[in-house]
Length: 202
Image (cartoon, rainbow, N blue to C red; front, side, top):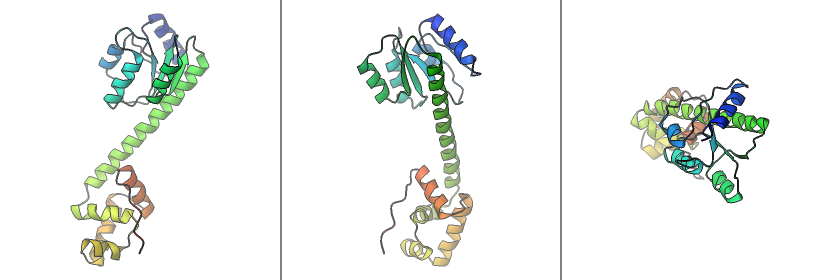
């Protein structure tokens, strides 16, 4: 929770703790930026108007730093342009004071779930990248071609190798990437940013 009013911070802390969630409060954006944040599913409840750095500026700084915490804006002075700017920049919610307890708690739960999904996706990509890095240079050439749905003889022709050799490489790719099917390889390629193009028509 980032709000320059200590009484608001205290009230929100009590409310959020009442549903069993851990909460930290900050009275300025700079304090929030300087703090060490646990890499756990979380979100930010952020006042728009802050003394040192506005909530919208903090949102920009987090985006620049590639910190993708979901943000729930709260304000006593909400206006349409401000809301539009915040939402366009990826804010999860924009709530006006006085806050409705359940509305805020629901938004926080949505934010936490959204962040949990992102963290899980990042962890999976890291795991896939480690597996991909374990492939030999030749296997890395075979990987995207398998993801395109190419047959062993097509891959062999493209890479100038024997079909038997490609069959071995393909088996190693499946083994090292822990893939059970070509569909698994396609999904992995997409997650790694090597989304396969459609195979050319014969």
